[in-house]
Image 1 (tube, rainbow, N blue to C red):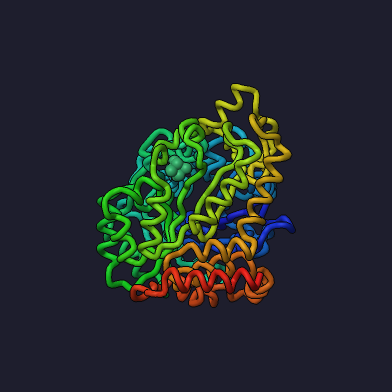
Image 2: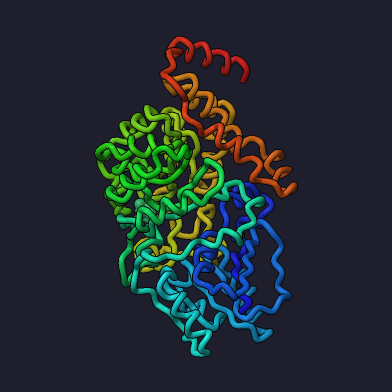
Amino acid sequence: MKVKLILPALTEAKSPYWRPIKYSLFPPLGLATLAGYLSPEDEPHLQDEHVEELDLTDSPDLVLIQVYITNAYRAYQIADTYRKRGIYVALGGLHVTSLPEEAMPHADTIFLGPGEDTFPQFLKDFKNKTPQKRYVSKERTLVGLPKVRRDLIKRNLYLVPNSIVVTRGCPHHCDFCYKDAFFEGGKSFYTQVVDDALSEIERLKGRHLYFLDDHLLGNQKFAENLFAGMNGMNRVFQGASTVDAILRGNLIEKAAKAGLRSLFVGFETLNNNNLAQSNKKQNLGKDYQKAIRRLHDLGIMINGSFVFGLDEDDDSVFQRTVDWAVENAITTATFHVLTPYPSTKLFQDMEAQGRILTKNWDLYDTRHVVYQTKNISAENLKKGYDWAYQSFYSWANIAKASLQHDHLKHAIKHFAYAGGWKKFEPLWNFVIKSRNLNNMLPVLEAVLSRVKGKSKEKVEVQTTQKELVTENL
Ligand code: SF4
């Protein structure tokens, strides 16, 4: 059986204003994971529209499309194209789970929730010519998960081909997050068997790994065993965690020992009322600066995530947030305009209050304002969001943030990582065009490598360096 697996491009990825490198980072791991359930005699073909032109003229027996909110219209268009030619199309993913009735007219089958139990059942039914219209995930387990079909991934087209997911979901319940809607009706946080995760890691070439788990430290026992197993593997890795998990116990030290070098942290807002309103309990009352110091002392760079437009935010939120991020030596920042994704608690509340302004899903990209704001105008929210990116990634602020570190080597790493990520667009575009993006991986590995020894060049050198950099600006 010929099976085509497609990740359609997110709308923003095709905009002339967005950065190609941002959409060439990670391969479509979810589809490669599902492909693991196919039989050896099946012929899968995986295409990711972010990095290649789709061929829609082929005639597979089955097309499987992964649908996010901002690729939904494109996904429906692709699905309709195949179905017009009598080809069977199945749709799954976050958006399909949120709005099954919207997706249904474009599909022969839809999947609601994660596919580890429903996709194998569908394959059996499909081969027996009895596929159902709708499969709803109920049994949540990663035990016996087949090997991810990494052979289907065109590694040379991605900066981070070694992305990996060893858990599903997250133990928390933030109101603006998709997670609860996606995992409704079953467990919303579960992990792989540690030995399976370690075997998957061992199969990955090179040193660098990027854990795409929502919360790598979310299950303490699992994470401890994972990190213990990774000791001695000589890996460097990146991942995501919450503030409370960084502060709790000594798990973060174990992660650093195993090779953790950069962490995505959802700070979201510096305002406690905003946190409480968003049900972000895991951040509430937590000492952000203590968590940051802990990470920096371990040589872990921080990618801070921030949301603008929560109800307590006013026009001052942008400057305050950028200043705070720079003063606290946050290496890279991801800013978002608050976005009420359909089926989330936030969306339901806003809809009940008549605050949803549009249901054009292409605008739900965390860069547009799609709801009625409270203490800030929509125009100022958009302007402030754009300004925050420009200001945070100005050379002056990259230098200033770098120089907040106690150690010169950390300052240099920070400067190289943040500058390299945001300031060398023509170079990234050139490497993407040459279709050898993974040649940049050794550079990334070098930047993420451990800073050896305790640097003594602390405050004095830092001051001198500060003066030098400021003079050159
Ligand atoms: S901590 Fe992150 S992944 Fe977990 S529910 Fe909140 S936003 Fe979602």
